[in-house]
Length: 289
Ligand code: SAM
Image (cartoon, rainbow, N blue to C red; front, side, top):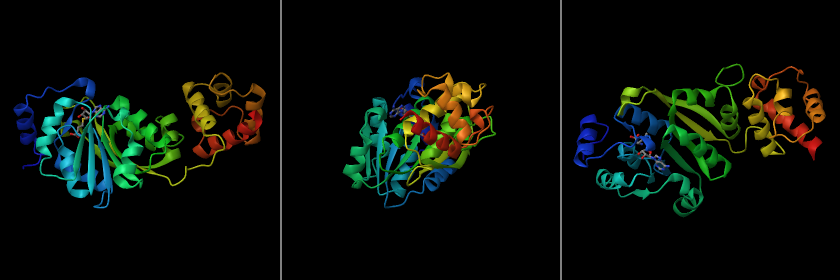
């Protein structure tokens, strides 16, 4: 079968099934073979790998993934796409199509069943509004994962990669970098999709650290402090933490902890590295326990 990366084949397939694009599912389908090759290469998929593909659409990337991986499970929410996927992936006996909302799939059980509990690779091109919760959910729930290669809005990719000093630095940068090493795989202009989205995209690979990038005694406190600091960007770190109900420490403990780790009183949260946040969280944790 001719590959769907050929735009004519994609258009023909959509027409044949009278498929209507659903905005609520963020449906923009890739039509650029070069980008797909970069994603497959960037995801470091080998014939030993079990790959979970989230949101296969009409199966454009899945066709290539099936050739690169040992096994692919493709989870697609839109039931109207299932007959299409059955046709476009007919040739590949190592692909399982699952018609489900990814948020309802027990990914840990899938990894146990299909990959003996060994780390899996995840590839996703999803509506932007669910991408962050899915990535964070995957990391936080400690599902065995090697890496997640995900297509996101260009700005979101930037936010994941940067450190202090950039306007894009924020809670997402710190959360991602705590769990993983981000690497920009490709920039993807809007014209690589049908229909054309309003924004440019980027593919980013998040390689999971064997252990988190920094060691903290209380992960929840670390993340609450990060959230509190960036919720009120204009405030100093001290005021951000004092005024947030995310952090239960007393004002005195907060002031003392900042002093003890050697940070200036007037520093803003956005100036702190992940290591500095972790150091502060460990000192504050001792004070509140
Ligand atoms: N991967 C395909 C491609 O690159 O051509 C399609 C990408 S399209 C941007 C996003 C896909 O994710 C759509 O097929 C959409 O129906 C699916 N999707 C949206 N929300 C989903 C969810 N919660 N669970 C599973 N699939 C979802």
